[in-house]
Amino acid sequence: MANKCHQCGKFIATTDGAKCTKCACLFHRLCVNLSPDHRTPLKWQCQGCKPGPMQGVSLNKVNSPTPSPDADIFLEAADNTVSSLAQEMRLLRVELGSVAKTMSSFKEELARLNTVVGNLTKKFEDIEVRLNVLETSNRDRTTSVPDDQQLSDLVTQLRVELNDREQEGLQNDIEIAGLDEKNGENPTHLVLSLATKLGYELEERDIVSAERIGSRRAYAASGERPRPRPIVVRMVRRAVRDAMIRAARVRRGTDSAGVMEGEPRRVYVNERLTPTNRNLFFKTREECRRAGWKHVWTRNGRIFTRKSDVTEIRRVRAISDLNKFFGTCNI
Image 1 (cartoon, rainbow, N blue to C red):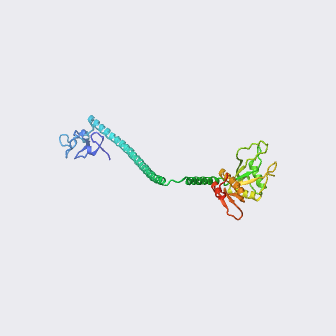
Image 2: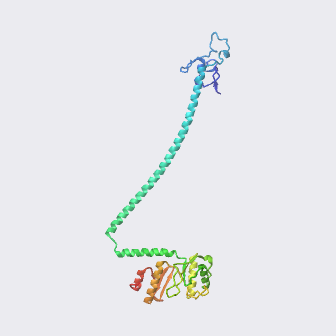
Image 3: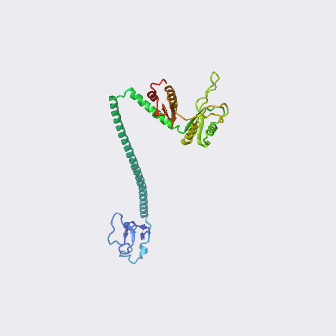
């Protein structure tokens, strides 16, 4: 329970008051004219308990509250001081919390910087290793410079590998040559009609795209009809493409009769080749014809040739192979 001054009736702290040794009542020091800077006498008694002429006077009358302006000012100042200290402590707690958050953020940033520095250090180490390798390689190169033939062979090998990668991208494509070109035609319908004639059940959903490639050819000065541009067809799957090519080989010699109007023309269905492979295939056919070799064909974008039915099959990868097989080519 809180203590009150028996003189003025206001609250008082036990340590800040004077206590009567007889009636045990608490008083503000100023209310009983005691200095705040001096200790309370050990046997101090209030005015109502002191012996003397006023012994018979009522305690309530003697100790009745009397106004004390100095005491009120002192107590108000003390209350203001306590309130100010409490406010300062609250602000200090808030600032300490903010400092703690800032320190935590600094720790996280420092950890992140340590990680970045570690990564940069590793990268610098890797770069140093690569530089050492390059320096070693450069020294080796200066001691053993490859001749022109080695460089030429390397370039040829790289070109072959690049062409092989390009050919792999055409593994679902076929090329149809021999179908006359007309304005407003639908290449997809022409392909479907040709498949029907070849006896293969090809559906429109099996075709990704069908279009003629190359620039349109003009009529010759003699008025001879130019060769039509080929139709390139991309199938949804390689199996569909292979089946279409097999059907065309079974019915080798198929013409355009029944596929489109006009004079029938021989129709050719082959797998699509890269420009490099197409040119190489043409040159291989010319060399085989000149040398009397019997067979030349393509399979999965690769070019093969064979002198007769009993000789070995040889693959042609580049012009250098033709030089090996037929001697120096005149092409």
